[in-house]
Every structure is written in structure tokens, then in C-alpha cells.
Image 1: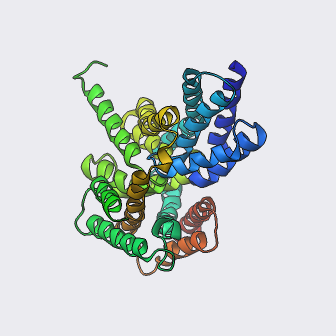
Image 2: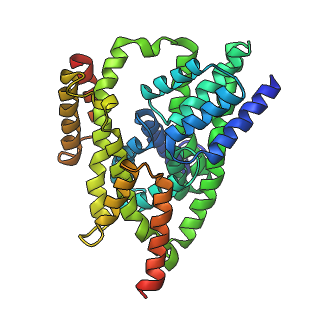
Image 3: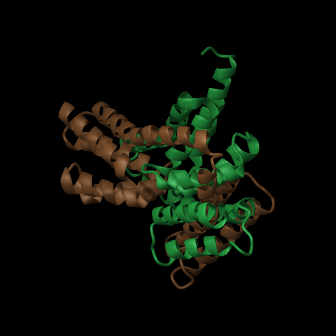
Length: 192
Length: 185
């Protein structure tokens, strides 16, 4: 069991250290390690975590570390208590590299942010980050989130309506984002 | 660190804020940005919008979980290393608790029809909340007619051509540096 904990820690530490490019890129890395290399769970069990992550809050990297840590111990025949400890170890391991790296970078940034070279670099970065945000929202305007007029016209038009409501509520009326999310979720419960 | 002391108060505020953000972030790290804007920039005034943009660039070009990277940076800015640890912990804790509870008790969570319908309504709102800051932040980044091509090219490269955002950040940073060093002088 100790060996499994050590392997979990090492695997998720590596994922935290080399996981570039956001949640979904990280997911394929985790899948490769957990399903392909270590056989801690089946592909089907792994797909469950992606589905659950989409309907629960929180970063997908944390969600999957917690889930894999638990399931790998259960699949190896241990009691749920040990599974919970596995969750804790995997989650801690995936966050640890970020903590070390980001601390070093934050320290550097706070110290040198007024240095001309750093200032110029960030002057180039800021407009590109706006582009990144725009791309993130464009990529999410897909059939999975909105459906399509052909596939399910009712869901599509309600979704577009909710999108506009949330956009205007946020942009024009500065409504609280959490309130908007809850309102749209409740509308979905009633209408979809 | 006793209750009532100023340090205790700041740490508790930091913890509450990021726990809240972690709890309501659906659909990936970018969904967290409007929440950070509302809580950390407008309400608590811990950082300004310009720094939030810098921070997104840093968090995106570092490995690891985007949302956690952002909370570490903000925590560090407020209260050093201890603040960074509190930020990371508070962002991870809600999803840790929820996923562990689901794994322990509700294996059938996903098949629940009501949960499914709630999320069908919620998803378009998540997309809207990510789209809205684009315009607000564009103003803060002082984008003019002369520089508007930069966000447009970046967005199209990622959206249509599948270029990794990490490369966009690298190129934009290097270009900004080179522009400042060699052309503006």
C-alpha cells in the first residue's frame, strides 16, 4: 500500500510539473499515466471522472487527482478510508509543483515588475491575453454547451437566451456572477 | 495567530474568498476570471485589472493548474509565502471535498436528471461570463486601433488553428520585449 501511495504521489507530482495548456491537456496526460501505464482503473472509469468534472465546480486537474487517488486504492482492494488518504496524497502532489514554481515566479515578478525589460514584455503580453480570453469563450460556443438548431431547437434557443441574459447582466448591470450562474442553472432546471 | 489579530483576519478573508471562487468555478480555469474580477479586483481591491492581465499571462505560461497558479500568486502578493499556501489550499479544497463525497456516496450523481438539467442551463452562462471580461479588460489593456490586431490574431490562432496558448504567450512576450529594446529606444 505504501508503494501505491508513493507511485500516486510521484505520478501526480510529474503531472503537476509538466501539465501545460490547461485542464483538458492535463486530462489526456492523466489518462495516459493512470489508465495506460499503471492500469489503476479502466478507460470507462476514467471517462466518468471527466463527466463528473463537468458537472461539479473546481479545476478539472484537482477533480481528477482526487478521484483517481480514491479509485486506485479501492480497485486495489483497500477500504474507503485508505482511498480518502490516496485522494489527499494525489491532490497534494498535483498542487505542489505549482506552489514551488509560482512562489519563485511571484517573488521575481514583485521584485522586477518595474524593470524596463519586464515592463516591455508585459506590454506585449497584455493584448495577447485579451486574445486568449476571446479564444477561450469562442471555443466554448459549441454544440456541447448550446446544442444546435437542428439537433434540439428548444435547448438551442433557451441556451442563447441564457447566454445573452448572463452577458448583459454581467456587462451592463454588473450583476454578481455567482447569482447569474445560479439563476441560469435554475432556469435550466425549469425549462430544459 | 490568534482570532482577532489583523493577520488572522487577512488570512481568513483570503481563505474565504478563494474557497468561494473554487466553489463556483465551473468549466475550467477561465471561468474563474469573472469571479476574481468581482471579488478580488472590485470588492477587495487586492490587485488591479492590469495586474490581473499580467497574472493570467504568468499563470498560463507556467505548468500546473491555472486556477491554483492564480490563487498562489494573489495569496503571495497579499501575505507572502503563507498567503500563497492559503490561496492554493482554499482553491483546491471545495473540489476535493465534493469529488471525495461523490466517490464515497453518490456514484450515480451523473445520471441524475435534475443535475443534468441544471447544468444545461448553467453552461451557456459560464460561456457568457468568460466572454464579458474580454471587452472590459480590453479597455484596461489600453488596446487602440493600432494594436487591436494583436488580440485578434491571438484569438484566431488559438480558436481556428489550434495553436497552444503557451506559444502565443511566448511570442507576444518576446515581441513586446524586442519592441521595447530595439524599436522604441
